[in-house]
Figure 1 (cartoon, chains in turn purple, blue):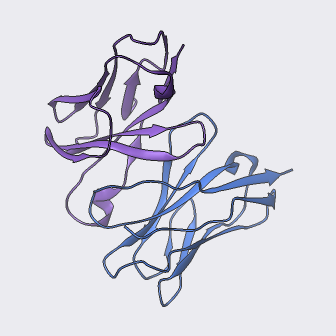
Figure 2: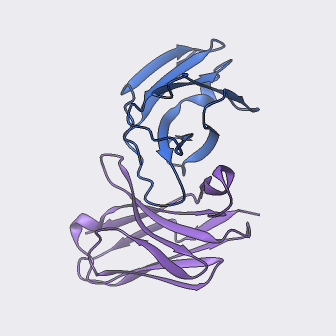
Length: 116
Length: 109
């Protein structure tokens, strides 16, 4: 059983299209995240949800819209895709509250998005 | 969260200890030091964390200096499977954790 699972693993699409990446965790964690890793390998936080509430919203274009239907799922929808959106997107989760151990992140395997 | 500085790359002979340093001179009193690693094409994997005492688990040991301005991750007997990028981060709470470029550790046969 994969703890944090993302789909799809690979996504190739044309500029201007709209696409979604889904994430599910079965760890019982309260907090979920989306990270973006660009070609230079920087891993930057984009969004975080705690119990379905948005708690972190970094400077991300509003073409990116996260949605958390329940605390086990956090999906990422991207409108009007641009070349610069090409990256690997990682979902992660943590307990979120209750001390240092609660902040340990468990990452998914990543979703590689290529925009042509 | 405090900024961290790590060497860009390091080599280690297989079977030897790998010592990965991290500077975090602006760490605040309630920030923990966390280490993760990312093996090629995989998601980052948690290794260990600590506040001020040295910590050890089945994967590694973490040595934090008394002034907490730097730390060292120790892989006691490096194997080829330990080849990865190692990230050191300082964090309090669950907000805004951004990883730097880390240290690319190459374990050499």
